Image 1 (cartoon, rainbow, N blue to C red):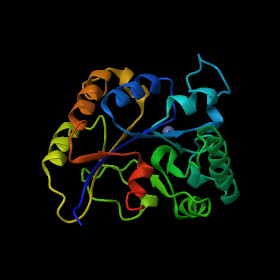
Image 2 (tube, rainbow, N blue to C red):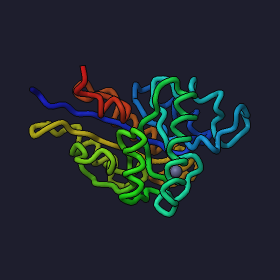
Image 3 (cartoon, helix red, strand yellow):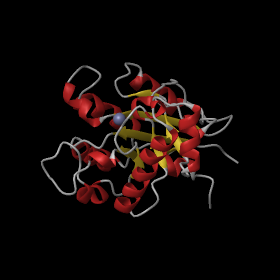
Length: 224
Ligand SMILES: [Zn+2]
């Protein structure tokens, strides 16, 4: 069996900036997982900083909606029943919005503990992203401790993409995993701006030997 290369993105918090970001992804055929805080999402308010519940299904269609907890606490500091509530309610709200079971997760603040992982597992969560960049392309060993390749503001990002595109997957599938927050692009810094992310997306997109997938599509890749 020939091994493959996969490219995925993971963007957090569901801010209004996702509208512009989603259209940039759609223009290039890229797939992203959006980790939403359902407790912060208004029912229907076009002026809200957070994308509304009524808008989310349409906006994120073709991508993936995943959990980021109900209220974005440091989960590992909560009692187990509070952890469970934060995850269970977020899954319930987001699944109702998305129309499919939202069983992906990104850890709020990137922090977790064995107890948090246990709660995720008990709630059927399939994968959970940390904020620890590896700079590598190996398929994560433990999907519940999913370390990304890099953040978009990592000065190495364009070099890493080039390295990924030139590499041949000889020892197994390869994954380039980019993460961040779309509101950061407004900072307008050298490696953290709309111009920078445009360059990054242009470099990553449109390669025939790369499959562009959401996080869940990546973990489902060997299913028929
Ligand atoms: Zn967050």
